[in-house]
Image (cartoon, rainbow, N blue to C red; front, side):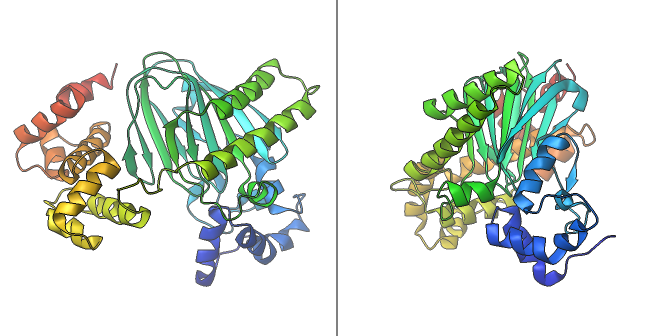
Length: 364
């Protein structure tokens, strides 16, 4: 039995993917409950989601295959991080109420790709890992990436698109925690809180709690399950505290652009990456004078608008270079350079390598 979702319910599905409890329940009532008569599923949709994250931790799930069929969404979503090539790592998982977790250990060098988009929150804890090169994108926006990721964490809210690639210098070990947003909202008081992406941050309290759960997973066995449940509750509270007590990635920096202004400008630059974008055009988008806009853009992003666009062009070029399909000349035109020599100069200034040398480094 297969169901298709009507157009009127698309927004409902998007809201459910972001962890909206009412939307999730409504989709469950409309589409999943009839199937529960024929399948042994949990009566609560959020419980079924988390149980699938553990029972089939490495399989791809369609948008709501957590209810038994690919009936709501054609876009593939995984309840855990997708890693390719899959044989580059070993994985083992555990689960508690409202949370699933896994430890990922790389077993060889070479490029590794990570992708995540699901209706659950994800916390990545990098115990160790030094990389030759790498990149991270949240909702297709490039983020700064440290060479040494040890003792760093990444938080990805439900519904966000997360992509990371790396060329390990030392074999990384990463713990992933998958949290039920419905439980987080209802039991932790986070129903009205905006959970924002946080790439490569540090927080001592959250780190220490996560490491205790990792140590529990390393020991194995079920005798400490109650202790694990308690640690999961503490971890959830630490995440809520982190978002309630400090600025998120999309929050306004004093004297900088507002959240909606940042989002609008970033989206425009991404859509017109290869074009020459006048400063006045960007300023007009957010209703500011060019001089004032340039000043507060730099305060928000740490660089002027033109330099930010160049950085985004180079990140896009690095992704194209990994495909080994297009020539350096074609890539230079794609990202907005009319002369290959100008592209090579800009690429080397940012990465320390020429585009050809960068492409060759990916094969070793």
